[in-house]
Amino acid sequence: MFSENVQKIFDEIMADKENKEFTDAGIKPLFSAPQNAKVMIVGQAPGIKAQEAGKYWFDKSGDRLREWLGVDADTFYNSDIFAIIPMDFYYPGKGKSGDLPPRKDFAPKWHPRLLKELPNIELIILIGQYAQKYYLGDKEKKNLTETVKAYKEYLPKLLPLVHPSPRNLIWLKKNPWFEEEVVPMLQERIRGYLNN
Image (cartoon, rainbow, N blue to C red; front, side, top):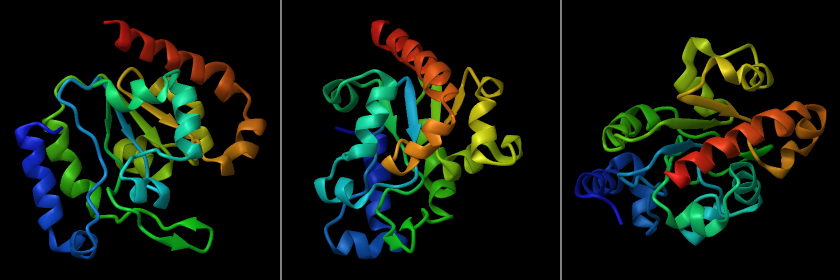
């Protein structure tokens, strides 16, 4: 499943004392890093359903994400086009209004090492505020809507997206430009990677 180097990183993540409670509970870090991946998807952290199934983006949000990408579940999970490297590889728990945020120190510790093992990445999709804050830094706009609206500034390498959660249906209705403009562009890029 993993290359030798990625397997080593996986084992280190499992052995890291920061992740002890997950490892002790038999929970494995949830990410995917195929060596030939062209697209890296950086989300927040697995949801509880994804963690329980051991399958990332395994919920309604994942269904909508695959719609936006223009791919079916088989392509999403079984082609080696997509690397899935969330901001935390474990479900962070429930907060007052949805899931808790990913741990702050997790991405800086593991993302750079995994990126070194992904030499063919051409597009990094940044889903939601945590991924955008980490990867865009001071290039981020005053809020998520403005950042996503300015997507052309970050291309061809980076693409900020709103989270595909059912909670964001109101946002999608208020911002029709997203599904009229951004989604078709994204689908065209993905078709290009799949056809090469």
